[in-house]
Amino acid sequence: MRVLLTIQYLGTRFHGWQKQPGKVTIQQTLEDAIFKALGEECQTFASGRTDAGVHAWGQCVHFDTSTKIKAESLAYAINRFLPTDISILKSQEVSPEFNARFDVVKKCYEYSFYASNISLPLLDAQFARVRPDFDYTKATKAVKHFLGEHDFEGFCSAGKQTKTTVRTIYNIELQDLGDNKYKLVVCGNGFLYNMVRIIAGTIIEVGYGRIDPNKIPEIINSKNRSRAGKTAQACGLALKKVEYK
Amino acid sequence: MRVLLTIQYLGTRFHGWQKQPGKVTIQQTLEDAIFKALGEECQTFASGRTDAGVHAWGQCVHFDTSTKIKAESLAYAINRFLPTDISILKSQEVSPEFNARFDVVKKCYEYSFYASNISLPLLDAQFARVRPDFDYTKATKAVKHFLGEHDFEGFCSAGKQTKTTVRTIYNIELQDLGDNKYKLVVCGNGFLYNMVRIIAGTIIEVGYGRIDPNKIPEIINSKNRSRAGKTAQACGLALKKVEYK
Image 1 (spheres, each protein chain N blue to C red):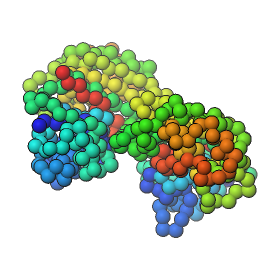
Image 2 (image 1 turned 120 degrees about the vertical axis):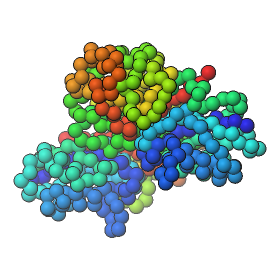
Image 3 (image 1 turned 90 degrees about the horizontal axis):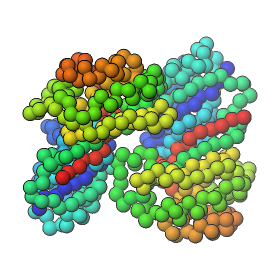
Image 4 (image 1 turned 120 degrees about the horizontal axis):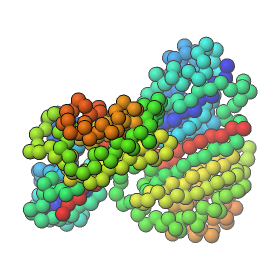
């Protein structure tokens, strides 16, 4: 049967999702736990890769197994062999045609950060730190320009090839959490390599006054990576939710 | 001069505040950093000890120094020598009579927890996990009984001696943070050893239906440790704020 797992992880000590020789990755750690629990070598397929240091509240992963254990019980069976920074929240049987990567219709990310000239140990695991002169009111003016369908070629790091760099942002919101903490929530039909971190980095630079928010449409249209902001730190990013048909 | 530091720490890897031979503690780590920054061996005095695994958003600590560095700049000077899980938020000169422990007029703690049968890696550093049958509505009925002045002898672990076990709770509130996350906020004129964790543990057992909330006054008056709930896990506790005259 084909099984869909919803998993949560703290990405801090991992070299991202994707298996790589000699590196501790989430995919390798998960496949090792599945092998220990089921005695089967199963290949896992995630909704998408997450980079080194990036977290997930609900990453979705499918794999095929011939186990006799009920799909709903697999979460408990496999969790016993996972380290404390990865946890399977849910396991369910899906149709053999289901694909955790290609069937995605919507993905939501959160980018969390705080503005301070001093680092805050109780936030650092899941928040990026930005300069204390970050201005929320300025930054919010940039946000709406990312909404809708755009060619995000300029908001993409080199290294991965995709057929098209056109993506649709369904929803984007910069929340003020109080105490100089902020959260950027972005949902879309898909994201290019580092796209959320480059959007976050650009909005943060608008908050510094370095980028004019009215220039965002022009920066997007330029398709020029060097016109967008820096790629924001990995630790602030979390894959919140993946939705399927 | 006498200096007051406001410090934040993630308590996870520390054996609490207090110096102990052969153990990694916050006090020892801080005194080592002060020595590296100022070349002076300074003894530090906190508002109170925190236990192993307990966090602080704003612990207060005083020490005496003959340094020529301005008090306001000491935070930056010492932070350079602190690990990433301890940070000095503020440093200021105080009168030579000021005492970070004896001058406290109010302390606030937060106890954070979530109800789930599966552990959540993105919460585990700063939230305790409780059983999924925890009922918030039941638990809130226990809270008001702790308000005011009581003899908390039964809400205290053995091991520390104090003149009196009478303490006043100024404010106590159980907040529903959504997604089965909860936060107990407790402010008082002082707290006995493990007192907040035993109050939290008792309220959690009320939420399980194991303790009748109407019995709380009787349990307090019994001064019998075995009638209160279990001491809740250290990782959920954080010293939020310390107030002085």
